[in-house]
Length: 239
Image (cartoon, rainbow, N blue to C red; front, side, top):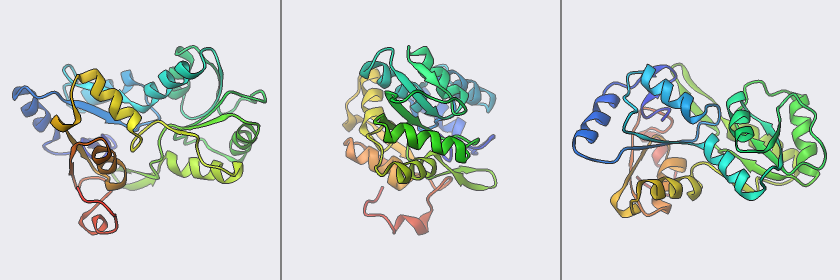
């Protein structure tokens, strides 16, 4: 949704009007976000604060999908979470024992979960690397290297994932968010729709468009976020 509906706390002109028009046409509107710093409830509150009516919109957030997936794999398991308070809370509510970024987790730990965390420091990176090297399943909430805000681009969760992967000596075992098909498949199941009937709209070719095409959807790129007309040519796919 960052770069498509809003930039930081600034709504993109016309976005709310477009969603209202789709609703009036009887279209199902679903929002899939790689946001690893907010819960589903906080995303809905943010949408409404920015002037979007979320009443009839299906919102799927990477934090909640991550929590659901962890609980399915190992109910009551342990997780060291490099991420926000909201991400830790979602995983804890799913029934796992959560160790926050500043905690010293036990070794071995079942999961190492990495999202975007603005408080990252060397101590936290060291704990994450030790957990990963001790055999934890390495779960990346998303691999977005950048995300757009009002004043430009900022590092995303993917930048932190790569730093930890370099220390562990291997990449994530599981990717939850886009372009992984996991999130879009759950969204389709919830909506009861086939991919052929859907259009994926996003602001990144390598994340949004790649996932949509892999799922069998038509895709559309908006130029209000990460990618531009100039960067489209650098990818092996086209929206």
